[in-house]
Image (cartoon, rainbow, N blue to C red; front, side):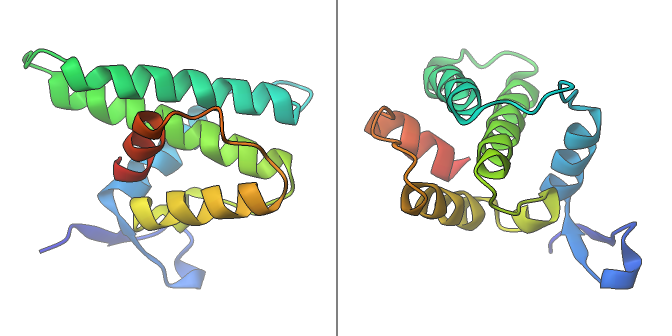
Length: 131
């Protein structure tokens, strides 16, 4: 059974997954600079997140390992949203009700927009898609 609640945007009648709620809250807290990041800056931030995410596969099973993994994934999704927005792709947390599907869709749209994601190694790309 999935855990869902009615969004604050109830007029849209959207059911939100727990992950979507977490991502939405993180986006609200995410401090945007006065000037939006350039595409290069947003891509750099995403690549840094992927490096941290792909290195988390070797995490020792600490008490809070799941919280750490979730925080890293949320950070990567925020970076992906920032990159998508920097090239004019409309994107919001509510679109992440199925995170893996949305990540793949955004990656396809970014590539179609001319963003070169070939700097991702396969492990990083797989880590992003898996979540």
